[in-house]
Image (tube, rainbow, N blue to C red; front, top):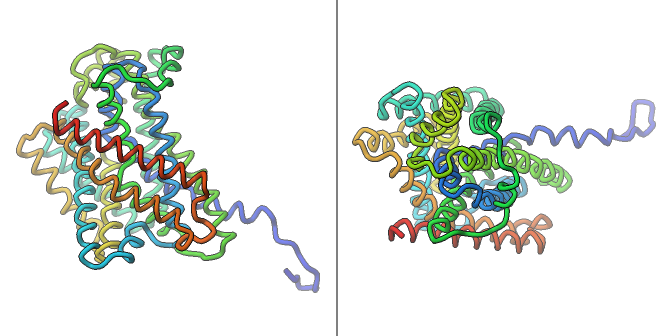
Length: 417
């Protein structure tokens, strides 16, 4: 560009790279969905029942999650619209309302699992009754959401990233107390099963990994952070940074999940009663000591608090995109807290509530994943940023695998097989 003396000054070639740095963060918020209380129970149960057999399931699940979350971020960056907004624009009013109804049920089921998980953690740590624990979890999540309302998305992301760090520490700490049989763990990378029960458990682990609300939310997070800039060079820059964002965030979340399985496989293998969060905590504290048990429980609490805040944020994005109604986040938080509090107050089995919530999430997966795969592969919509052949095939294969496994999980759960 011309300078004051008429000469031409070249732009600093490093400047575009620096401009991409602020993108880092949205994927860390979405990654909270991958370390929620439902995932914790499934991974510990897998390790305790079958040792290192199903390590490969978590590796495959994490790879699938990276593809899905990148596509959601890509949609938001290229179109400047969230997935619910794009779907809402392409549907008649009746279709939008029906789609919103199922998506709202998914968000409620998500919130149910997170509030229940957080309440269980408070019961473990302080002996707080479950209904009161649910109220406390709801109150803290309101505070976290208030940060987003008052101080912006960056502050909200910072708090959630801090919670993710606590979760990782809580779940990895035990590995330093008692080592891992790395030879056996490496053997668990070979895909295989050992009876029908391992198929069910693998389906639940995979089925609970890619969450519908995380798919809806990620496109909204990138849109809210950057708005829409149609400049292709800017979009390419942001897409490159988003790949790093997704890769780093889900590598961290995936490592936490794998650490849980390794911890259980190395220390709880064959121990009964670890298919609940309370049972898993008791077994870990007995096997590795009260300090490790305490850190583990704190990780569960951080998981419940962070994931319920993220779930509420996702619900607001779904509502505004599909029915074009915006209500304050804190009001929405208060309303969606009610079902969880009712279940906890009535004394419904908390673990059973977690299981049923995962089934509801499984039913909602195709409604989010299949449209995402189709939209990001459509050159009429995405232009030059439409998925290439390799990514398109990977996307459809991932969607097919996840939908099939979720369908299997629903069938096996409902039939009691």
